[in-house]
Image (cartoon, rainbow, N blue to C red; front, side):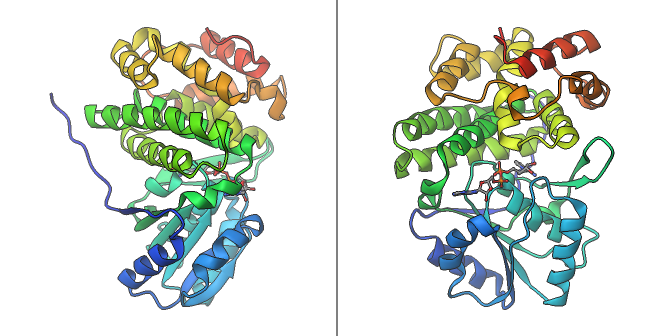
Length: 359
Ligand code: NAD
């Protein structure tokens, strides 16, 4: 064995029903006196009880998916003016993404510590990756980058906050987390620790999502899914974006597609594309699903969850397949298990666009 694995420094608390106290502890540990609370309008009801007893200097609810640069700029200006010394973000990946845009290098409040309280399974809270979207003729270009300053200092997972997540979002977001695990198996910096974490992430997600599919209010089911989603994000942050994420980032930015659903649709196609040339990853994933093959395990779970099936259902135009080819080809890492060509990528995108059988 020869590899170097870096573990990102972060405090992680699981505290179902106890987010207000757990967050207060984190804010105290930081010694923060002027907290900025970020939560979208829809997430405000979740954030209010958590923020109630904190020293709040600013509340901010302008949260937009994929963090457009002008939205980030307005938040940065407001944060600097309010002289904040910590950020509490309560919400999904879009809300965490805005908090990261505040903390990233170049922002007037760069390096501000973040306490993240996730309310979806996106996993952004456990990565040092930021994302911003520039407006453009094709609907926008998403740029992502790594910056140690954007990694939240602390995460508080409170499963009760996710009992309000609508069923379709639970499914899409949970499968988004599953995509982190699967893509970590062959990410550009993958090592055996990433694979072990991703494998356990798949097990947790498959178990948790199975429970939540039966009962959307199941706190043990949500806890298990959050646990899997955390491991998913940690393994993904370490291994780096593989083929799956490169495809989804290009499509999401170009056609303004909903993030989680896009991941949920594309995943089985990338799995089927790569596993014939990634036998060890395949065996690990099959074991984690408790299934004969990884593809069968994912297909079973997708059936249970009635998962999103086709990109055309989420607003991707048919001519988008051709438009997306070059930027995706340019982004796919060289270590991808199956060599990617214009033709096999076009076939994969068409199948995902139509929702045809991934096998
Ligand atoms: P989202 O944050 O946009 O949330 C989706 C919707 O669900 C929103 O309307 C939100 O208000 C609502 N919502 C959130 N929690 C809820 C709850 N508990 N109950 C009811 N409604 C709730 O979507 P997302 O999928 O969580 O995140 C997507 C974004 O995260 C994308 O921009 C993606 O690029 C980013 N992301 C980044 C990373 C990273 O490492 N940087 C990782 C994963 C995702």
